[in-house]
Amino acid sequence: MIDFKQFDSLISMTSYFNSEEVCKQAIIETRWGIGEEQDVVCPYCGGHHCVTRKDGKFRCNHCKRNFSCKVGTIFEDTNLSLQKWFIAMYLISSHKKGISSCQLARDIKVTQKTAWYMLHKVRALLAQDDAEGFCGEIECDEVYIGGKEKWKHQSMRTPHTQGRSTKTKTPVFGMMERSEIENEKGEMEYMSYVRAMVVENTNRDTIMPIISQFIEEGSTVFTDELNSYNQLSTMGYYHKICNHGALQYVVDGETYTNNIEGFWSHFRRMISGCYHDVSDEHLQSYIDEAVYRWNTRKASQSERFEDMFSKSIGLIKQWCDIRVGLEEIA
Ligand SMILES: [Zn+2]
Image (cartoon, rainbow, N blue to C red; front, side, top):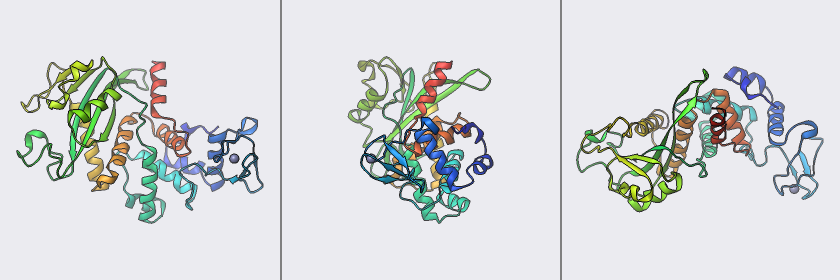
């Protein structure tokens, strides 16, 4: 099996994946194994009795269909070389603030339209996993995307023209778990994980079901003074409020939402620096990308590439698996 640890730089990655054949072999090995252990599964019927054809494709003895290793992956139905796809995934996973379609187009010599399409396909792989929940200490916060004043700190906003009006802005709700991760030196250091989503509004009826879906009862939830949160303590959570309206930012040393606000500003930089403007239609996929970058920010480049590679061929090895693994070691 391929050791992804060796891909710690673009040069090591491109010198390994130096032909279409090597790329195909990597997909086959990762999907179905190698040698006697190999078990090719038909992407159409799920049958296991597949034979390799002379042209390198496979034939399913059950449904009698032929297929290549690209069927069922994000590379299906594209004429782009796998090398370009792999380099694109590497670049997308290595740029902390994202990469624009113009930049990607120049880097791998495709048209901007093609690069835009590739970015959208890759972004679709980064969708958040609904099976993951949070517990412990969680900060919750809302932001409004769109409109000139959208990113200003609340104390800087002009009254009545901005804030929580959804007329020109899209509300986004976010949760952040305060956590720890073991670094290379074996020391525990602060880490946080985010989940964020576009919501219809920030009313209690919208926000509370999300909180009960993703945050375990008994957790401590830090919020601002928005009324939508005021039933949290009756729902089995410890609720701590930081009153931003009264310009309170840190109460008793732990009651604050500064960490999640750090995520919002990371998201803002990604959008303004890279994508300039985002339509409502695509907003969730940009949020997913920002969340992915945030939650994997302490992973190595080769780990991020491996994760993205696995996702691209449908293995969806969620980041939480690696995270759980780290916790088990610790
Ligand atoms: Zn079949």
